Amino acid sequence: MFEKHEKHLENDVKDTLLMKDGKDDETPEKEKKKKVNLIARQVMYCLQPAVRSNITVFNLNSDDDLSETIFRSICRCKLINLKKNSLLILNLFQHVRNYLKK
Image (cartoon, rainbow, N blue to C red; front, side, top):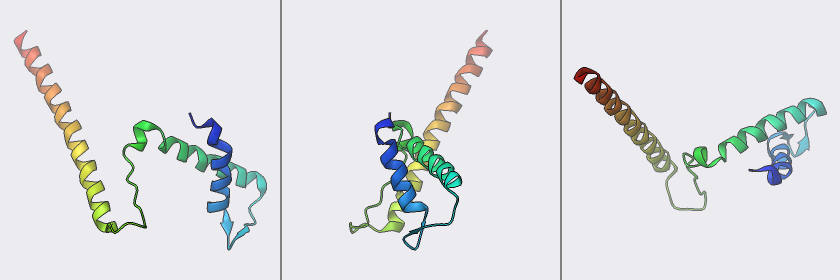
C-alpha cells in the first residue's frame, strides 16, 4: 500500500530520528539501516486505514489546547472499548440464552 512512499519515508526517518545535532551520528551504517527499516515499518503499520482511524492529530498552529485534545482522545478510546465490550457481553448472553433454550 505504501511501497511508492517507502524510500521517502526511510529518508525522513533517517533525517529526523537518527541525527544528532544536525549531523549523522556515529552508528555503523548496517545498524542504522536496520533501525530505519524497523521504524519505517512501524510507521507504515500505523498508517493502515484500520489503525490510522485511531490516531489523533494535534495541529500546533491551532488554538486547541493539547490537554483537551489528549483528554478527548482518551474518552473516544474508552467509548470505543466500552462499545466493543458491550457487544461481546451481548453476544455472550445471546449464546447462553440459546444454549439454555435447547
